[in-house]
Length: 307
Image: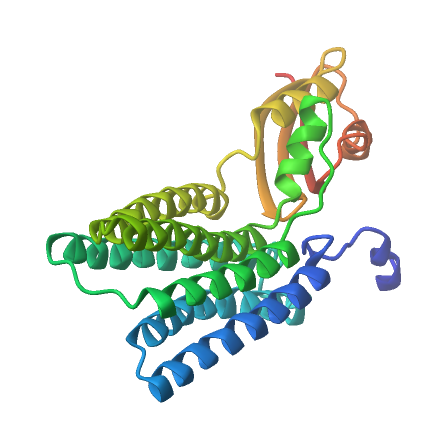
């Protein structure tokens, strides 16, 4: 067999999301927005002697760091997409970055909760005229950032289509979105707490809103940890799709003896299946049966005759 004829049987292992480039650019834009806001707050706070500005700027820096993780993951995954050292490509770098961002988010929730609890037990005077505009400005920046990082996917109607839409989601983008959403939530709660405290004299209200914000962020962080962790540990992508695969393969005397389905990148799943049959067919026949199921980017079939 001539070596050149092997090209028909080989294929690339590039499992990046369909919107990888767009999501990378949007994340970079949001980093620019948040970094500019962070520098303006820290410099302005130092110039005008406002600790509220400095504190908010330092808080923003943690989100910038998490967004930077997301951007670097996009860049690395794209540049190493054809690196043969990665057996199933670099599609999971986004999931790894999303998991890391979730940990950062959990740390932010702990810090906010700790600081808020301290202020609840030992209230301090608040410069309302400075703090409220800062919170409003931060909210505006985060609303713009959240709009840029939104997910535009349409939803399918049947179970398999709905699964594919869900698993097309880029967990790296989702993590970046949750970070700016968390900051927006903190800004909203801060405005509510500050306005209430100023109008009614309830200084504890600001700290109470901080605790609520910490709990909300912690809940989002846990959701991200579960979603990204499941992908990193190669849990079965979806029971509905696995069931559809079995249904498509088990025709006549063909039976699925072993099946593994896992995600290798946004919108990309890998399948390894063992078929036993009284009338075994070539692997290509079974692969053709799965061609109608979207998102199966790497299919390996082993065929064994019944004993």
